[in-house]
Length: 309
Image (cartoon, rainbow, N blue to C red; front, side, top):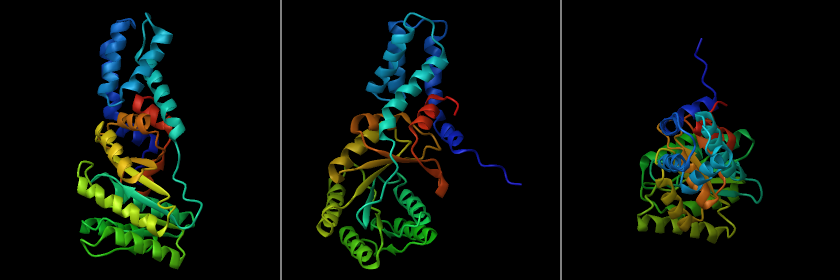
């Protein structure tokens, strides 16, 4: 009999253990046999910022504790509860599963840096859509890497969805145009377009991404309907500069955070949410199709704070 796979929350909590343990150790060190005074609050705020939570959210946690517990002894559990409340309040308005209803075909472009899990995310969403009775078309728009083209092809087979692809080095914008023409001709209601992973500081690669978006708009002025930024959960505060660059280049409409199953620095999602107010569609904690789940602010905040489900 095979061992039962742990539930999604417990695996998310395990993935965020680096963040929650770091926070827990800091809290214990700060508040052992000590009242919640101004110096302790300052130390706590610094610890929360060091855990990638960002200054605004860290300030709100300490303000909440100061309001209720100033000059009193405070427990580790009370600090964690305050952290979970603040994170949940920050993220709850942004909890929003990707919605591809409306004008057909819906065009979804996936962007992000190399290795963020962008192509895998596209594939998992294709499988999900197919199971829901939709008719997706996949476009292997990362024409720089043979492995990316192959990866989209494999996910296309899993989903039972056709894939538009070209030879290595082909024009990615032209491929996107062809994908839209194919979708209109063959009656596909969703087009999922992969793009080359690019570093946010490489101007020529960002220019190519802008070209892809321009060509899509030339074919369908109201498209793309969604531009999904896929962020790697292990990069910490660097996620903020990535979001900034891709927002400028491609008018990002929503976020997916992946790789929350390893040494995740989960606080960075709070920073991105705080600064850009982008909808958070999904989080990923593994390679399997079922490992991409709709984002839950409550579950994420409790796992980040090291609390039980």
